[in-house]
Amino acid sequence: MPGRFRTRRFLRRPRLITLALNNRETEREPARQPWGADPEITQQDIWLRRLSPAQEGLRIVHLTDIHHSLFTPLEFVERAVHLANQLDPDVVALTGDYVTLSPSYIWPMARALGKLRARHGVFAVLGNHDFQVDPDEITRALRAQRVRVLRNAHHRVRDRGATLWIVGVDDLWWRADDWSAALHAVPRHDPKILLCHNPLGIHHAAVHGVDLVLAGHTHGGQVRLPVVGSLRGKSKLGERFVEGWNRLNGTQIYVNRGIGKVLIPLRLNCPPEIACLRLRRA
Image (tube, rainbow, N blue to C red; front, side, top):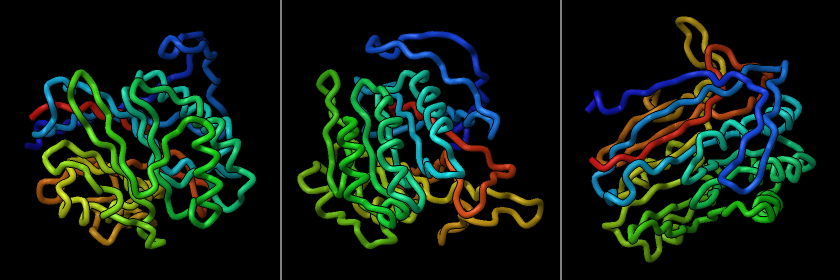
């Protein structure tokens, strides 16, 4: 199947234009800022056997590891939100780590992410840094901005008579994940997309018959050196699950490199990423 999973990447260049976002509001494009290049936009087809013909072509825009902090200024987050909206998503998936260290970043981050627009909604789960700072306050802030935070819960997306389940689990490192609660009453035969901050969740997802996992956490390594490779972000499953598409048995996974930085204010040979995933019926 390798031929089906070709990834196309390109950098978005700033343009001073005004455009309408989903016919709901008009927003001037934020200028690119001097502290870093725009996130790289990855476009990839994901082939699912259980996908309904009515859901063919559904676009999921995936952002993760925002890490709003001194290392990731609010303007950079706003720029990423603008670029995500330009992709005209049907669903936006956020997979955790929204702030680093300080609760003072929570509400500014939430207001920035509240500008995301998608036809079927914006969905989020929490990551390990969110649990470190204040998971309940982050949940309140995001929900106040109409972001649906899935704390071991699920949501049914209905489109032209077809059903797609968005499932979310809390962070594995904090042992806050509850798979029984997250998947309770979700029909096994329906297509399911799991939002899970840590890629290690693919083990549980495969057991529960999840079709696709969206994850972050690794930052794609964040710093990559010749020969040595990634200085951080290697999962216990090895390099396979540090970034990009892969699978475990019948469950596919996409690990996003994320937007922000942590520990050191640097990305090297590992640009930030916004993933645009188009669902296709296999």
